Image 1 (cartoon, rainbow, N blue to C red):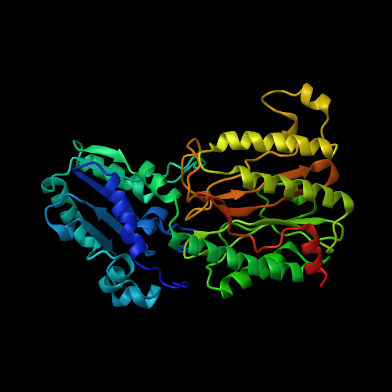
Image 2 (image 1 turned 135 degrees about the vertical axis):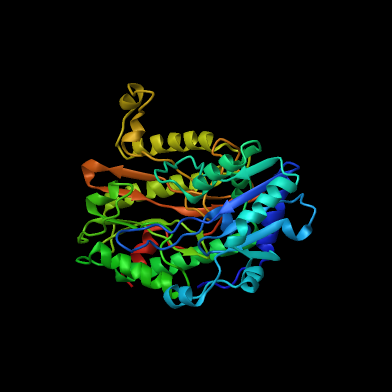
Length: 431
């Protein structure tokens, strides 16, 4: 790992919180993600299942966590199964965790090798007083999975072998637990934000007319990796000129030209926790009067949203209030009129021509983190705030995004040190 080791007490607490939510007579299983193929004998970089990492801190592939809190034998109530190291494996793929190392990371005393899984799992299911079996699925509201995951294969295997047990969804439980961040988690997310800041400040000094979008991408990743990040929290969006009205532009292959803006939706991860930053900057270091007018309108909405994103607010009600603010700002910018609003289609309001995405999402081990968007916003959750205005006919868009830790008395901006005022951005770019 590249990051400072995480105190295993975080994972011990997380497992205790999970156990407190399970029914008596329960067993829960969490599988690592698959190593995904590319072509021939190639594979993509491995990304651990977020729930398994949350409960164990283990990043290794082919790992399984079994929790059976009611089992008579205490040492079998938490079992971590790992791929067994061997000389051939280590020659080709490097070091794999020993049992002692896995115990030190996870705080789980009973660590076993994968070949032992079938017989012990059968013993727990048959002799462990297990009635309810909690299995995992990806139930994120944006998920549209088109491949069969390791979890999905395990569900099929388990139901075929043990058809009379009562199967339960563990995803809603994990979603509830993960959306409220503990202090250790916030510290890791703050580290990710701090690394993101370093990358952004580097880019402000680097950017000038004639550079390619991918050169800016290279400046970011250099700074991220040299500070202990694995790199980008998500595919970087470096969108200059007309590209910045496209929400998920990822080609990053155009020349940055004087007079244009660059929308930079780029952030770092750290220890599997993510940050999510967007800034919009002028290629030549100076906003035009119109660009600055629109920029300040977006910044005003972001700051108002910061005040509104509070505990007990429901996200979709908050979004409607943001849309009212946006409507007012678009009128001031003379992009829509009272007549446009009066004659608008209720299902396609006038503001949506220029603002066509949600203002916020939860953030954590996943960039679009788990949690119920229809529930009240929770104290301790982390959200983005990212309004934007995209003007196709004028050839530019502006989005600004910070990461907010929702507090009981006040919100904490994890990106408060990252330049956002137009004047400050111009000053740094021209210094």
